[in-house]
Length: 114
Length: 116
Image (cartoon, rainbow over all chains, first blue to last red; front, side):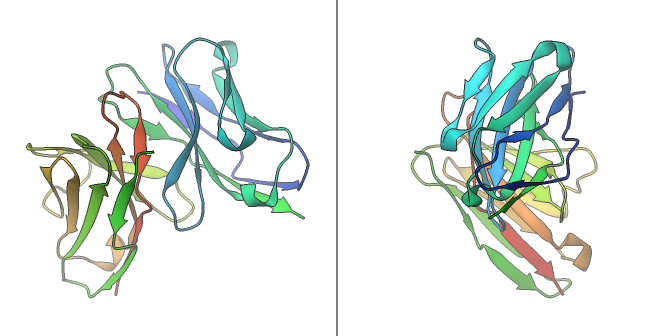
């Protein structure tokens, strides 16, 4: 079965600094990969997704992620963080024939210092 | 874009009572909806897949008699927590699969259930 690991539970960055959130997956083939953001008490908003093709994926709000097959990773990046980016970020994986179900990582809580 | 409305956003109920949570796709028809449970500081745990016009498919370990799911129309799925107990207190989130999209999901804003 597929799994997702987000090694960092909490990350704090200064506003304007760059950001990288790590995500590693376990699956025998190429999975479908997603990054979602969740504000407190809210549902999830899709930031970006990777299905195939170009391994560098651009998303909303200035986020991007790069799929690295050799490292089984799909790290999320942003060159300059804004205070409004403070939230919980979830990496998720879906697999072919998996009933269209997503498996989520445990999340990374991002705090932005002004 | 696709919008999913989840209601109520917060509910407090007494132990032993039942609570119904609604998940509506407002501007699209969703043949498949998903129900998740999220514990504090934890990830989302898929509880069940709700398919319009048929029985829900529950994940292993989820009590189907306790968490009743009904997907009676293409725009509405409901989750009823029966005989609620304090350990059922959690954040419940639904998502709806967008038409023609294998992995296109829109999430509701969630329901905070507190059982006292």
